[in-house]
Length: 254
Image (cartoon, rainbow, N blue to C red; front, top):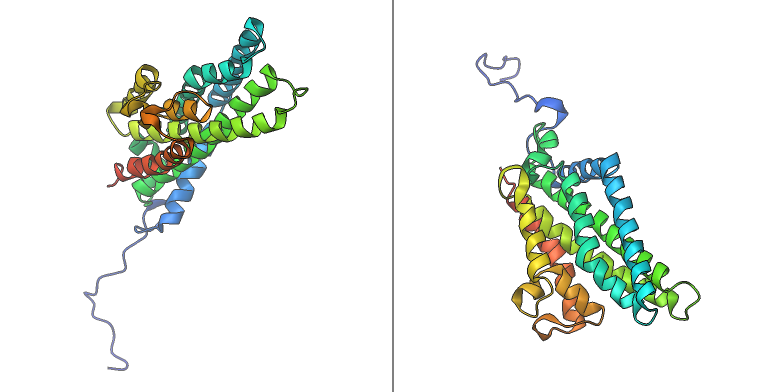
């Protein structure tokens, strides 16, 4: 009735979680927090040094191949870069984006204040994929610029083609490393896809079709795993980058 006071035993409203976030924070907020954390970690000294080392190794590979002969030097240098430099560089960056620990633990600084851990983890994985795409493209472009030089006629075209192949491969590597970081203590499972790519990534079988290197080599004009066409390899790289990031986040659910 009007004028009656509320019952004295009515439950008070639940307080917000520590740090100002309420439980049930929208997904976009958690994803944004995860992306901001990952990008902040990637601006630190160690990942920048890893990037610098990767660029230096890509330049060295191109110089060595040119010394062996200018004919086909670009293709050989790109293959060498995709075989070693690209996966190692992105592995180091993915580890730093996850604070060199398990993905769930890397999401905890935001999740502890109420954001959903799998949304934060998705943000970390997506930011890692975006950064890895940029790094993969940069390494490929550096190789073309070093081995071919701007005087050659298809220079710009080769840079663009190699750049988007590097971007797709980089994002796919990031997806594998993010998913691997959800296994074992401190995310040591990220070593498994790295080893699989080194050992079997260039094979013509199923593993070669699943790992980034086999599809990248196909896009560069090399052997195709399972006889896949180049559009199929490009699609697999793009799809794996997205699906693996989603799978990694799903494994970080509360």
